[in-house]
Length: 147
Image (cartoon, rainbow, N blue to C red; front, side, top):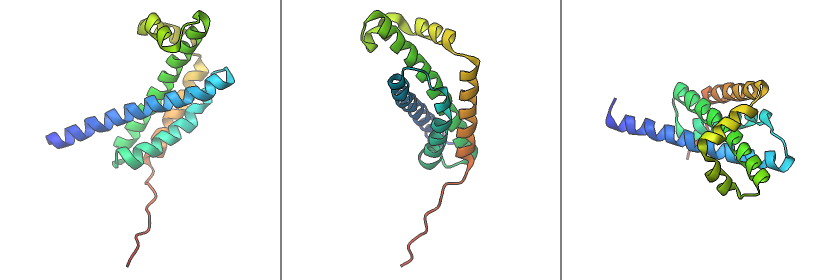
């Protein structure tokens, strides 16, 4: 492997992580609006992340599948940590950032682990499988304009 390939792969991993964090933040919006967790949204999130990773981040099939699975796992974990932060914020009457800063990552992580059910994990795993399967499909090719 050349240095250029290593840097490219590291950049692809960073892109997958950022896409996962963005998907988790977007996933939080309907969750907060409906006042309940929506673990089944892991399926459409995984589908969209699989398409995004394959189209714009990585062209190789298995690398795209791994990156899409990583992004979906990060989105699933991140939304649960955000839900915990929102709940702490609502209980303590702090702002969202103040609640996160005051609680600290270890407390947020512990509260998140307490609130995750087995069905949440099943939905997340299903979303990861959908993301990997979607990323392995070939992207649609556009017909070239001859002319």
